[in-house]
Length: 140
Image (tube, rainbow, N blue to C red; front, top):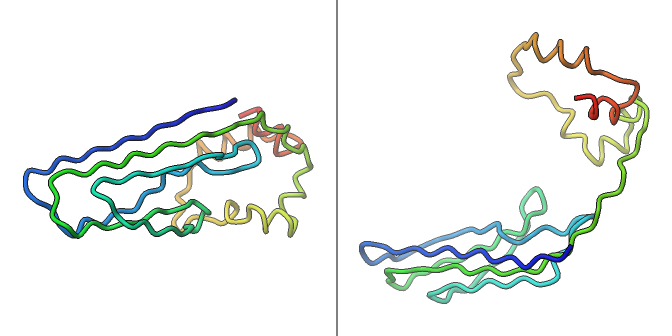
């Protein structure tokens, strides 16, 4: 599918504002099922925009407006193309313990710092566990 996206934010201040610092995470991600073909950002009053990627690979747009202003607008437009996701692999439970899985998604296996006991969750996990992770997910 093809999408044309517009995100418009407008601010109106009661008094003049200076040193207005901002960080935007508004660019659609490019993934295995989505592609961002076009992306523009217009800021009024004009500002120089810096770009970097955060820990998760999201593009962060940072800008500051030092001139006094009483209004600010951020107008973002994008064209995105999506595709149907491929069927996830239906592998056995031991695949979750492999080095390849740890490299791709291992942080999801890390325990929380304080993970309270939850008998209801334990019961749900035991009742829905199937022969593969994918079958378990579908059962849930």
